[in-house]
Length: 104
Ligand code: FES
Image (cartoon, rainbow, N blue to C red; front, side):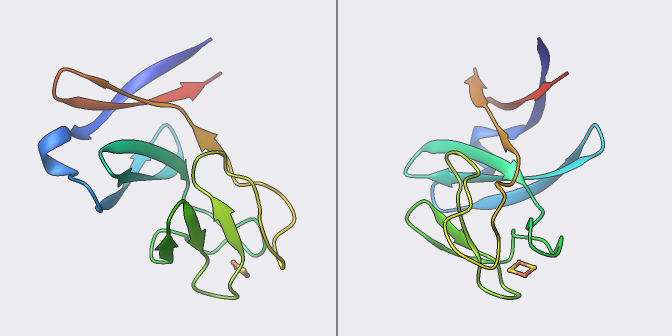
């Protein structure tokens, strides 16, 4: 089980944009890639730096500190020095609201 939290509106997070939200103790970065939304915890699993300022190439976010890459669709770590995934969150759109699922 989990709970859906509204984080923003569709018109505030257009294609190519990203934003960070503080929800239930998590900093979560939500991306809009081509009209679809993806969310991961804003924390690199290598040394805990934020990922949200990193370069996004397709679905890969690169940590600005040491260059580890993660898949924003799954949170999977794709390159060293990170070896563990960052947490991934499901996202849905309800009307004009973008919502993130926080699992128990
Ligand atoms: S803190 Fe992200 S790669 Fe080191």
